[in-house]
Amino acid sequence: MADILLIEDNPADVMLTIEAFKECTEKHNVNTVKDGIEALKYLYNQEEYINALRPDLILLDLNLPRKDGREVLSVIKSDELLSDIPVLILSIFKNEKDIIHWFNLK
Image (cartoon, rainbow, N blue to C red; front, side, top):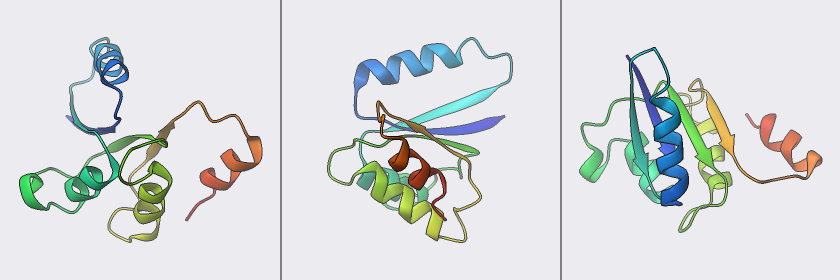
């Protein structure tokens, strides 16, 4: 079973994403958090996320409240324990130069 972490603050986008995953034939578990601070608590098993499983995949909105998705991505990619988790960016970002920058972040 795949554990997926969806980091998204828009309830409609969360619902659409969860509905889309219902079409998958592979078993999965989608956990959601609404902002960057909650995402980092989840990833580092802090507070209410002490028993959270390490995700096999992260779906990350770049435009998040409290801690921006770009900051979250930087933390993930700079941490040896997290950097190998695949991250898919969810964004309406259209600037190709910025997309390439975030894609190449290590």
